[in-house]
Image (tube, rainbow, N blue to C red; front, side):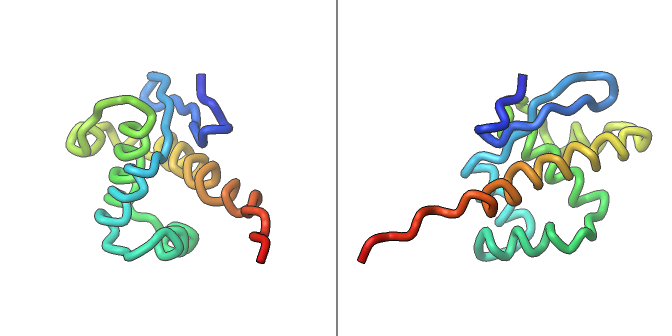
Length: 112
């Protein structure tokens, strides 16, 4: 069962249930994969709403690994195209859980 407080997302892809999560290590892996310097650039990249098949493969594979499923990108790449809508939905939920909820809970101001 996915723990929303931890940013976990439950997804069913190709008839199998998964938990996806972006951990700090996952975010670092995404920064490398998308050749960006920081989390703001990563959020801007994903916020564009323009993700290709390679983007979805990277995102879902990294999210699965962050959720505890030891899957390689090549395994996700081999999934049938009929899974694309399920993958896109899972990635969308994962990005919202990671980036939108973080924005909704800004840290308290620091005392001077």
